Image 1 (cartoon, rainbow, N blue to C red):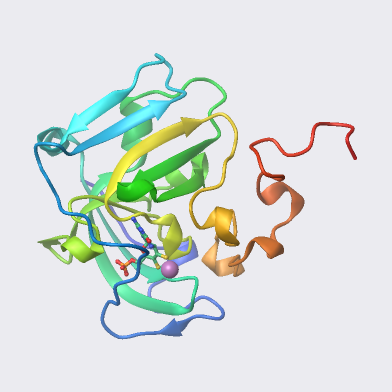
Image 2 (image 1 turned 45 degrees about the vertical axis):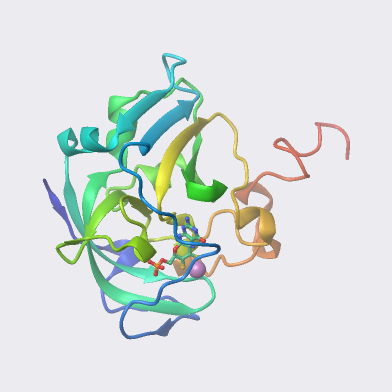
Length: 219
Ligand SMILES: Nc1nc2c(c(=O)[nH]1)N[C@H]1C(S)=C(S)[C@@H](COP(=O)(O)O)O[C@H]1N2
Ligand SMILES: [Mo]
């Protein structure tokens, strides 16, 4: 129930370098808008959980989870920034509190409908400004903005904020998500202009075509 004002990485009214302020709230995503079917919907927490089990919340189960309000801006990596979004929803860190990760979990993959995904460092996911939003400016999310649930990670470019969120995978090693596999930056810090994968430092992300990159000693 705490209110978390944006700060540090997301000072309201400050636009990250290379971004342009847009008015209103553009809709931006790849592919179609999914239809919400409440009886089939769930949010799965899976991968390296401490228990080894997968946890599922049905849609009605979400009502029992804590809520937070976060005011933040939204920065698309292609340039537009829309400002002053009042998000309301479940703090993402709640997921880790309720479903403990196995030792060694360093990243999560946030999964959305149709296989969209975004990988996040644990610290980005558990940031006090990261939430799974159900509402925007006091109204339920609209379908095109991610109803019934979307992740919001305000300090990272928008591709790290999956709409139509359906799963959180706990990972013991980093792995690229949808745009991160397609030339976008693995970290995506908007304040550091981390847009493209060619800008990555060696330790910003996994290398090679599989999870671990080259084996030690292979040059
Ligand atoms: N499921 C899904 N979520 C997504 C995307 C997508 O293609 N699919 N695009 C992302 C990108 S690139 C941006 S900038 C934001 C845009 O959010 P908005 O349409 O609410 O402005 O959604 C993000 N979430
Ligand atoms: Mo974007």
